[in-house]
Length: 82
Image (cartoon, rainbow, N blue to C red; front, side, top):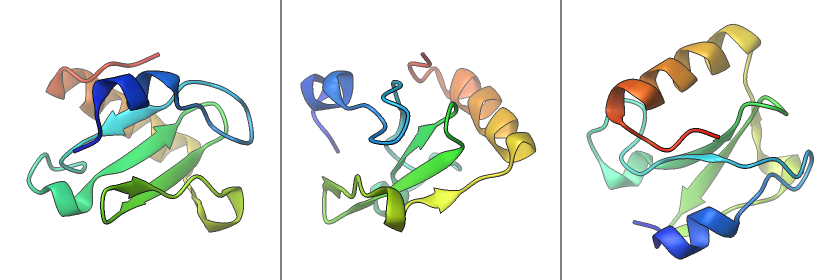
């Protein structure tokens, strides 16, 4: 799990916008499925061995519909959304 202090200062390297941190993945099950989402740039950044991989070239592009669903899911889970 990433420290709150780190999550608060991380921004998307492409858009410089805040990220939504899913500490236990989309399904809220396992820390191994954790990721960061940038709704503004439609990118999903993986977290590998507890380290966010903040490289645009390695991020996964997400459709606008999928981002909408993920933001809604984040709100359901009570996650901090920008």
